[in-house]
Length: 342
Ligand code: TXA
Ligand code: MG
Image (tube, rainbow, N blue to C red; front, side, top):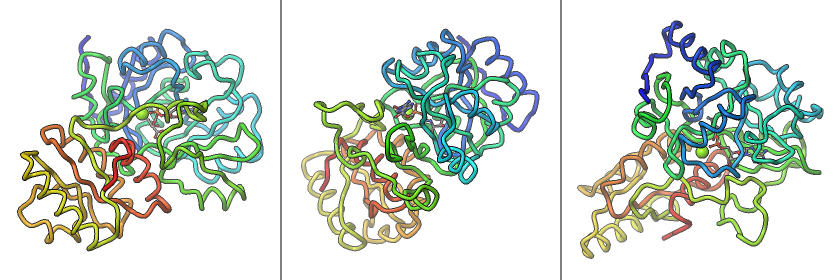
């Protein structure tokens, strides 16, 4: 298969990609979080081609992406007040809402669950593509399964060239981590995956909001996963990743000590660290994530930085307090690290 790389700012390219979707093909497209790999979410064969291209286990359900809030009414079995309130406050944006599904949604999308996940992305090209396609787009992140999610069209190309019909290039994703996933299907609203829409923001609208247990710890294989995505190893480069705990100067000292000790053992090391600690790291290999006082900078850089780490043996990564958007950062980092902390 030949994968076309098309510029999203040209309307003709959006139309061409919408045409591919309507004919059952696969198109990677930019969103504000990460690139998605889209196909017609109402067609089982089209959805199956997503799982094939990604090498994704078929028991991991997909998000349906919509461009009009009213689509909630045809895709959810019923729209609870809480869902409407969240949609009005946070859509378009990095929030995915789970409720009971309408009957006509293919089982492939929901992996057989009786719930479905919906999101209206903020990225204008994404919404144009969905609207022109005329169907909801089922779309996971556009990486090969197990790789960090793509935040640039080039990342998608590296993973998917020859496996999908087209990539719509809309530049870098601004958020850089996948959407917050909240389930309204149980008794109390529960965050299944943290993202840029924070627990505090959700609580302002909903009152009590719970957080799934496995956000900062490994999934317990003896309990069913609230979100099947949490069972799988994620976001990992070929190198061994360590989350280095602590704050400020303390982390800097721990990172340099670990770096020097691994280097003495003959390992090739790289640091993913803050601009504040950069002077401390001196000549050591460093990829800067941004300012540690601007957690959104760490979030926006993490996945693209992890993609640069395949040539190293050891990655030493600074941590953030697991609050606000820092919770999303720590959730992805700890999964990339296989929960190894220093
Ligand atoms: O920001 C995002 O959400 C990106 C962009 C492309 O929109 N998409 C994304 O999709 O991250 P994906 O497939 O990589 O992650 C979707 C997550 C998975 O952990 C999946 O298990 C969970 O949402 N999920 C989807 N439907 C679900 C459902 N009905 N019940 C529980 N979890 C669900
Ligand atoms: Mg993913």
